[in-house]
Image 1 (tube, one colour):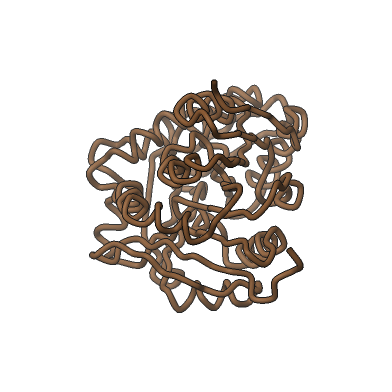
Image 2 (image 1 turned 135 degrees about the horizontal axis):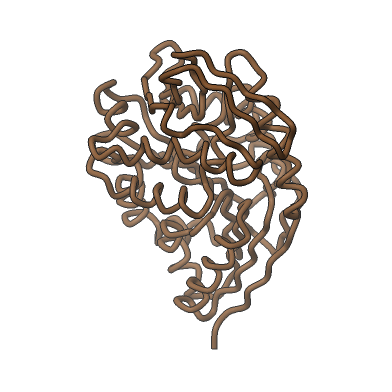
Length: 327
């Protein structure tokens, strides 16, 4: 016997294509140019990111996994969730450490992601491994769809991988407020956070010697060419990743190595890059405990527990609603 798999579509393929068209038009006509990082993750991009997580320079995934291996059983037992809701779950590999104690007593795992293929793959794998687990995949966007995630009882909401670092501070405030609105009295929020550390280690993690991250960054151009009938010359751009101390974040860019004139026929957009012009493709903010505690508190979330590795590279923050709604 295997658990059930249910897919809830809050976004259709049409919605996602319209959103991409709007994002790309806005980003490539702005000065300076930028794109949201979610467009890295087609099938090839997802494989490249999986390869990045295994690189010696890229510490976040293995460090967060090590923390989860240490705390998952006690954490789930202490929170007593009937369901674990993961925001941006994707293939849900690290989450298995949380699901193992949940599955022993039954329960439901809800994963929100923009990729229905990733959700179906995760559901099949997880229900085969945990026969008593019910899986609900929600096709949606965490910027807009948190309130629509179906609820079945006391929940532990997880946002792992320090994906929150991809958000500007002005974007994090409404996101945390949205998470707060998902929670009732006995619910909890588990947040993965990459911490501030040496510039050398941070930049190496985003500009590895094997150039896998460079290929991952360039993949966004391949996605635009395929999805929007484009002819952006991938070979005319190079990867650049730098730590910006003023904002305590990595900024990942593509830099034009020559003048570029291209067209995205699907959205009737002509695109020009001057030699040396940059396209911002991702920010990855790094955190300090005091700062994230203030941000959570401003959204009505109180820091309850803080778990980090011995070296202080990465942390998992557990937060509770400060003004809980009725259960």
